[in-house]
Length: 142
Image 1 (cartoon, rainbow, N blue to C red):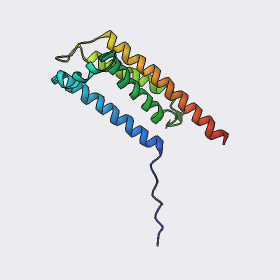
Image 2 (image 1 turned 135 degrees about the vertical axis):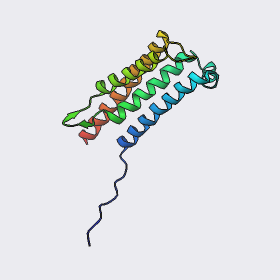
Image 3 (image 1 turned 90 degrees about the horizontal axis):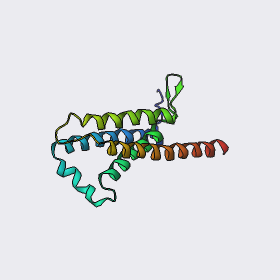
Image 4 (image 1 turned 30 degrees about the horizontal axis):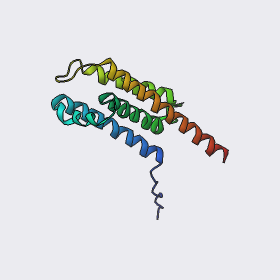
């Protein structure tokens, strides 16, 4: 009788990568909804200090942080993905999302929104990279 392999538990990094994918889908869904029915999505920003800019900072920054935690350190072929590489991809997606608003109805391109989003990417991305580095040192030091 052949032995069956033990079921693998989902690693925290794998779960975080899935969370990053879900976060990206949420961003796409929010952007699409804001194009069709802006009042549905944008009404909650009136309750935030800084309004829409704070929303951009938190939404895109959170996506960057989760992406760094989920993808930095993984391997593609023989190369390890670095945190700056992950942040470069996230920043590119953020720029593309904001530039797409040039062609979407009910949406307007805003350099202030883009700056808020990129500030979130830089801030949360740096925090996530520092967190990864600290955890890596703690694990290797044990």
